[in-house]
Length: 239
Image 1: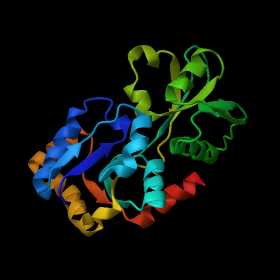
Image 2: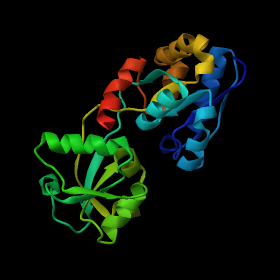
Image 3: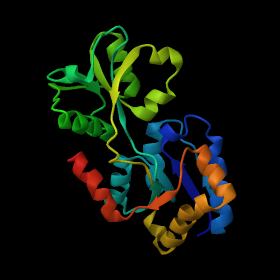
Image 4: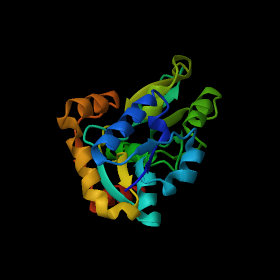
């Protein structure tokens, strides 16, 4: 396989990126080929380079893009991690999730976690009036802070990574537990002959002390296999 380039969704490298260097070292040792982790400074850089990487830890919409447009092969995901949303309002607002009904909501419409939140709300009989698009998750926070919107949807991982000062600008009124979309490891089609070998290393990590230690640092428990058909549920949510 020779040298492999690993790219990781920037949301997962914003804090303690050294964990991913250790992950790459582990893969290098068990695959017998050097794996180089290349950190992306932002989403623009990641999206520009991900289709050239050998192994990508991708968010759900990027996983679909890599599959549909570039033929990448889904390998595995952390069995305990899902992309969820938090429902937020302005810091001084007295509101609850039910108030999202027939109200405009600030969010990032292109991100699948928005659909996760809307699906959860719909199941509760809550249907927002429409979406107020923001360029990114911080844009949602700023819309609430500036009074441009009263309610918003945030990616849960983004919210949990916010500074204390930023968190004080919003108030959480609920969160989803849909367990429907997730990040997963995607392998470039040029390595199709090694797909099962790479998947096996990922699936067996939790069974080794060093592998389990690295996975724990990434908040991952055991890995579970992901087949191309498994992405259809995500595709259906995207619509």
